[in-house]
Length: 186
Image 1: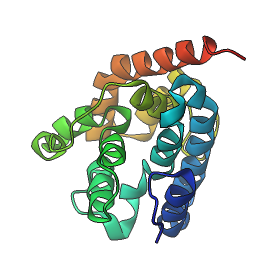
Image 2 (image 1 turned 90 degrees about the vertical axis):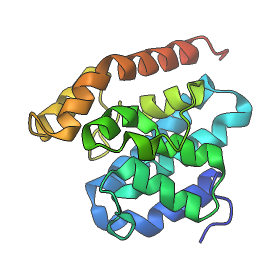
Image 3 (image 1 turned 120 degrees about the vertical axis):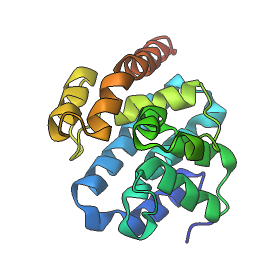
Image 4 (image 1 turned 180 degrees about the horizontal axis):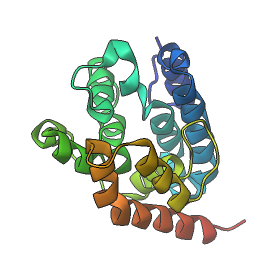
């Protein structure tokens, strides 16, 4: 087990110990981590490793052995917390990609609220990486990714409803990250 979960290497090792049997989920995770590395210019130098670590770990809650609530951001955050991961990493995983919207749909808002959401360039960049990467690691623009999710999940489902409501919030995070990336010196 990795000893430094908030480093890209430690996070990648933990993700690799849990996600490869999930096929496309593992491909998606690897591509999100690569996209986070690309987007790291949008965050302070001190936060770049944390961003990439969070990208590696954002979907670990899908691992069958970690499923408790069936809500992967919460299940992943709880697992990381049980491993003694830094609180900020736990919170980023808990709140990636508008998790608060899906928690509301699932009746898990109170459970998720245990993990304070930070509104920061790091969370924005994590959302950017996830919301521009398809389910099998494809590079998507934001609208294609959102539309893909809405097609994959049945109308009326928790995920469909949550993504529909979260779309403006997610778009804002993606646009802020793109702006920050564009204004970085070459």
